[in-house]
Structures are given as C-alpha cells and as structure tokens.
Length: 294
Image (cartoon, rainbow, N blue to C red):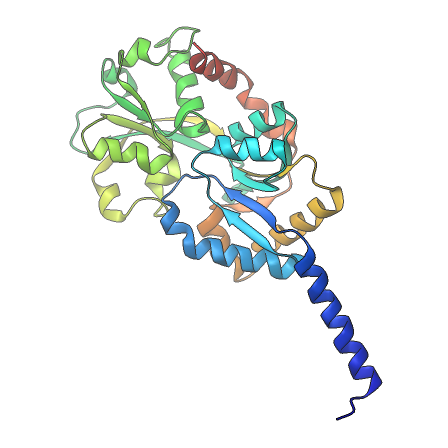
C-alpha cells in the first residue's frame, strides 16, 4: 500500500521526536526520605509520568536513604533535582552543588511553617523544659524542623550551651536520630523516646501518620519559623534544562494536578529568592554544625 508523502513525512517527524526523547539520559529527581518509601511507590510513578510527558524525556524518581545522598548526588552529577529541606539546600549550596529552583508556599503566601515536639497524649509534659534528662528523638541530623530549629530553640532558651550539644540537656545517650519524621515518632510509640522533633504537618495533616496514630500524640511545644521545603536543581544543569523543569513543575499548581502535588510536596510551588529563603537559618545552621562535629 502506497501512503501519501505528507503522511510519511509526519510519521518520520514523530518517530524522530520519539527517538530523540528516548536517546536523552533520564532526568533524576530525588525525594527527601521523610516518609515511608513504600508509601511513595504510586506517587513516584505518577511524578515520573507527569514530568516525562511535559519534558519529552525519561524521568527517574528515587528516594535515597538519607538527604546526604542527595547533596552528594548534586555534587557528583548523579542527581539533577531534589525535593528537600532548606537545610539540605544550604549544605548543597555551600559546596557549590545546587541552587534553588522553587520553594513551597502555604496558604496566605507563607513560606515557612512550625516545628513540633510530640509526645504521647497521656504524658504530663507541657513544655520542653520538663524533658530534661529524658530520651528524645530528632527526625534526622539534616532535618530543619526535626533538628536544626529545635536545637536552636534549646539554645535560645539557655538549655544548651553555644556548643549546641543536645546531650547537655537531655543526658548522655538520650539523644537519637531517625531517618525521617516517622522513624522519630516510632521511637516514641515504642517507648524508646519521650518526645520526637518533627514538622507541624506530621501531626496536623494525614500525610505521614494515620488518624489513629495522631490520636495517641500531643504537641509539647512548637518552635520556628522553619523555611519551607524546596526543589533544588543541580548547579551544573544547563540553564535551559532547569527552566524547562521549572515550567513543568509549576504546572502542578493547575487544576487537577494539585492533588498529586499536595501528596508529594504538601504545598504550592513558587519562585523565590534563595538568599531570602535561607536567611533565617544562618545562625541555627552554625549551631547544628558545631553539634555534629563536636
């Protein structure tokens, strides 16, 4: 059967586009491991499909065991994009590995949230000062709301010295670090810690814990503000590629796309000044660095 020349030309052009997209290396996007990776399987696939369709190239979404892997991946070129905390961005920026692409924005235009200390609902604590000498769990060593800001709050209250050692207050051997919010809360449920430092939305929303789990907990204390999570881009990624990714991600703010956006990123995604977004963390990060290198 002979096909019209115009039809053959269209087919050839379409085949060329498909071949070009397939030949491109996959864009690698890493998600900060702040909830159960198994629970992300469906969302990972949806995110890969969403971005691949808009960028006309393969996209691979990974969930590393720690955000330190993301920071290292930016530096060595194995990770192109990362959804991570403001602290992680600051550390990646310090070694020249990444820059801010988009920031999270809450209702009312807020680009910050609160950090919570959570304990079991039947515990008598009403403030962090009552936890002196008690075992506690921080979300991770790199978590802004689950370590950096709570530690800074302890310093501001005079409960730890300028060394930033949380064991000065909680006691030697009484400080644990998780690999995300859920792991810290699980220590509370298991009786291994009296309180866990996490983001406010771990308790206020149903993204990380079930309603039954949240019913077993209460807020001992809130502190902050905490700069919102960000989407960072590898510093060496060509500007044109970064711009294309930004445009694709901003499409999450449109119509039906917001449901997947909220499951993945919690907030609206907006352009923001990197310097302004990280400004409030400078002193707190310095304290955290001293605490981790003592």
